[in-house]
Length: 234
Image (cartoon, rainbow, N blue to C red; front, side, top):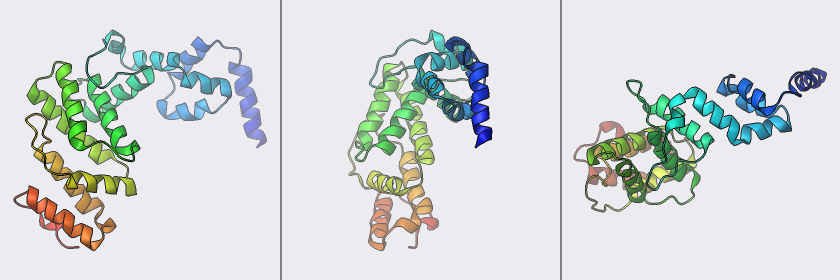
């Protein structure tokens, strides 16, 4: 206990008189994995980590071209620097290929994941998918590009949902939604629908009641001509 008190006293003595802009320059050079711990050192540091200045500096340091980004049209807002930092991070670590980072991909991923995870009654998948498609088209993507990017985002979000009861009921809701004809590119791709069923029958098999299992299995047989044997057998 005394060691912790001495450590805090040492931090306050060493850094207490530094202006905020110097503290920010120090903080953004520390690995982001340590930021939560740093923000708990004292109340002043917690305020800095909640502020726009730190995240703006961190954003420009990590992705210098982010400062040139223009606001875009469409239904999904860009948000402030903290949100933009998260979007760039997702774009780089989840979707980037050949070194190309597209901020809007990160924003659409965050949008879809939050809608599915944080809402007790998320909108219908067709509404969410249409919102993503509209966003990409508003940003200049072709219909084919919008459809492919939206499919990639759905797959990434499905694979990164927390494994809990809420996700189980969410996936059940997605597969049991009534079939509604939507013109291309607003229809969800075959591989996205397949992945939802696959996750239910592999990761959540033990969560089914017997009647629910056979209902979902009938939905799968209705949608797909052939289903793998691993999905069979309750």
